[in-house]
Length: 391
Image 1 (tube, rainbow, N blue to C red):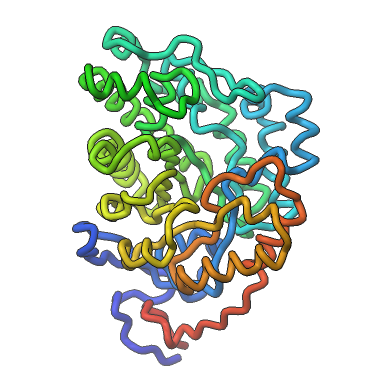
Image 2 (tube, rainbow, N blue to C red; image 1 turned 120 degrees about the vertical axis):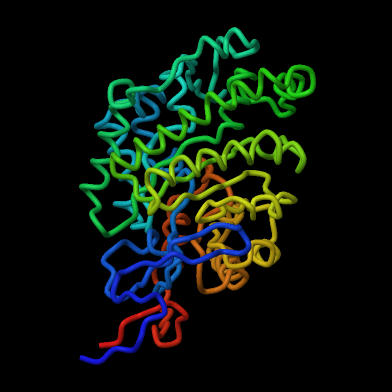
């Protein structure tokens, strides 16, 4: 057996630490020969791969007939907090379409009741928090997560069940909302297109908002670690309400707290990739570039090529407009081709730039996944700038 000297000084499936000037931090770079890890996980870690992986946000949803058989019968929290049901709903798209990622059926707000903030999801209205957080006294009365296994056992059971079912055929994804998004929901009490009450608190009593954000940050980090320990191989932070913030507000009330979550998680689980997806990230990519998230999620409103230029070598995810899936398949094929060409062949996870909506035909979701999984991208490892052992 003959081998050349590896730049990382390790052979198959090793790793080394590499300085990343754009983030002023250190990242772990992996050798990729003979890896048995699933495709999406490898790409999220920054590895060279044989093709672009694919999954869809809200891929377990009402667009699927099999899903509606449960959503028409059970409430949202009953579905998401009953392990058998949550597991079935999580696996429905995997069994139907074989995407490269399987995300657990849950909600970004799931940890809130464990912190003392009760919510429900009302059909046609979305999440409702009957007692919103509006004062420092309420913030100080919130509880820590402490024992997620006791308070949120269904999360561990669902994730471990998914992992057992798919093995290494797909990457298991966990997720949660960012501190800003969970704080805004907690203050507003429901979706508000102007985020009026939170913006008022931001202007008149920012100390309360910062205290709420701080409490959420440490507990969200613990919740993410709990998901990883339960079987999640990649975790996505959803900043679903980032579009309510201008760049200066984003830099003050969202990004630093999301970054603290990432750093806390990385301290305990340095090898688990984290995706940071900000809905309304356009105009904020220069700020998101400073995040130490492994992957930056891009919404459908931004230009993929321009985002790539700003984010440089950072892996990205996205960003096909989900409404394209309402149209004919030739339009879907063109949108996927345009997205993948703009993203380039490396460091890209194909996804929609927002969640799949209930009116999208199942066969179009299947076609979207098919376009990625049937790629024939013969990338020679000899041409890769990753370190690979040659035997």
